[in-house]
Length: 438
Image 1 (cartoon, rainbow, N blue to C red):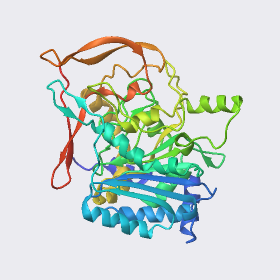
Image 2: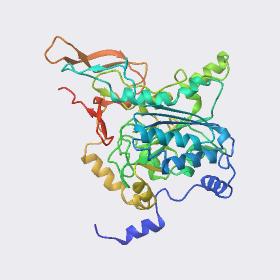
Image 3: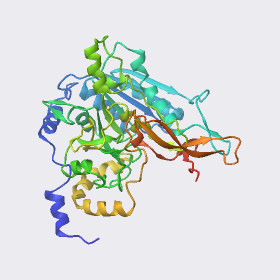
């Protein structure tokens, strides 16, 4: 592609998500002008940090990822943090690196390592050919929930925010901004959940499985501005306007901050008025936990379903001023490889050149993919196509249309089935997608 003067103008004068809002700058300055623990926690918020980790060679816990985590704890204040890491099947190197990281973390913590995940009694699914497997998403939901166990084991501890971290490379100050700067109202961040944006390479957005725009559509092609022009396209417009709180129905992005109240039991018994107020906000019983789908050949990310369970179900049709309380923050970016992470500050400077190409290419690619359950409203009677197993038939079952009550998170799903398989020697693989029967 030939260089054009407009490209240089965009790079220098119209970069995307580069000029921080004033309150971001104020928090950055507070961190950079002091070395005191807790210097980035201006409101003395308490934070529960949860990690479900697979670290085969120990390079995460012993390297840049681990140091960023320790820096973040120091900025929040060790006395305001509880760190919970659940790790399994990472071998001797992974276990040793986790122990060393725990020795360096001066906050309250629970670091649990299991040499092998025990699948005894774990639910399996039977495929049409008679084979049985553990569903991948059910496993992922379980290991994430194991990282949340200290919330049950220490019911007297309560937190303002919960930060869930993946095995992504991140900047500690960015994580702090995600926690305390996203969608700031009257000096305090206000959200049900706030997600970073994760990249598998310097240009390519990664977490398509969990991300849905404000109307429940999945994203377009995996480069800026990510969301398609389908429907009212509020999420896409929020990105193009450079908002730090892009309204979405769900997201994850490798690092996500939650209002911790959704994951904890209420502090004290509530009267009817207080309970009614909480239920109106929470929309589901608390505490919530990660979960998986039950229908065979219908798959949703546990990281999408958790958002469905902490928000009020959308009205139909969704109004233009709809706000789920779930936000993607494109100022905050993470990557799954250190080289990709090092390029994110450069590649964002060209992003404003992409929207027209993105819109056309996404439509040509048939995105977003049609989801028959996207617009379902929880609690309403619906007709759904469901796989019904039948061990006596040669095909093992068939799809039937059934009447039932819609649940939360229909927009998260797609026709698919993901099951666990043994990992390779290099730690890769570990799952496969099973073809959906005709």
